[in-house]
Amino acid sequence: MKLSAQLAEQQLRERGGVAGRPLRLVFVDDSGADESAVRVAKRLSDSSDVVAVIGHLSSGPTRSALAVYDHARRPVPVISPSASNPDLSGLSPWFFRICPSDLAHGAQLARFARQRLGAARAAVIYTNDDYGRGVRRTFVAEFTRLGGTVLEEDPFLSTHTTAEPYLARMRQRGGVDVLVLATQRVEAETVLRDLHGLGLRWPVMGGDALVGIEADGALAEGVRVSVTYLADRAGEQNGGFVNAYARANGGARPDHRGAGAYDIVMLLARAIEQGGASRTAVRDYLAQVGRSRQAYEGVTGRIAFDDKGDVPDKPITIAVVRSGRLVTEWAP
Image (cartoon, rainbow, N blue to C red; front, top):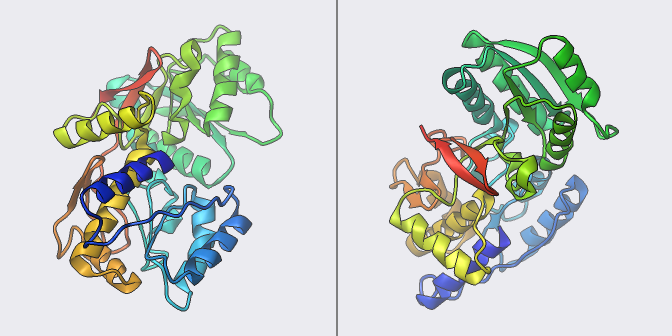
């Protein structure tokens, strides 16, 4: 996110700034913790220089920070590229996000499993947090609606160091056609190691929290991940972004969070140029994007906010790990 935002900042500087003025990004760390997010939000809200906030990364800290941004003496518009918990929808008139909620990821994974893989039996291992429960709940609902059977729903707790008992029990019950990991990358890596250790070759899929697992080589080969953006996305605009990012970062490829941060910086620049540089002007401009104002066409696709600050039309792609990269397998 930081590297992509800096690239956008540099490109804006090279074209003369925003409305003839330089745009400066200030980076702060909320440590992924609610308490830290509140302190960060207070600092940014109190700064007369801050026009808008890009973030936060995670849903829990975002929700805690919004209580500060929303009730500041001068409320702050906030746009997140990745805070996906459905409970954030409509939580504040000052909050927007360019990613679909967890509810969309779970349902899309279920459709792919049933309609593309022909899976009839599934199991879910999930982290017992907002993200894991959200993806699990919507996957199970859509998979069963489509005629599938969910054999197990097992929580991966913070005290767990292995998923082997879950996997062994699934094997005893006849195995599954697909294993869904509604977890973060670290937990998924543990499950994958246990799967390989037991000699099991079930198809594995998970939500966008697994992005990065492609760097695990053979361990992750063939794993499918639901994402809203991939670097191989077609289009001249995205191609230019990916090439510029690679030049600036030693050949690296941006992920969905980075591409989202890039789009947000560019969208905020347009909001300031066309609507004004005050916090209220920026918020009012964003609320009109995709409604009374034209949708924003970014590297991640079309951004059009509804009355809750969500992007309900943003499509979700299913990617697969091939030779250390996530590549598009199914784009609706």
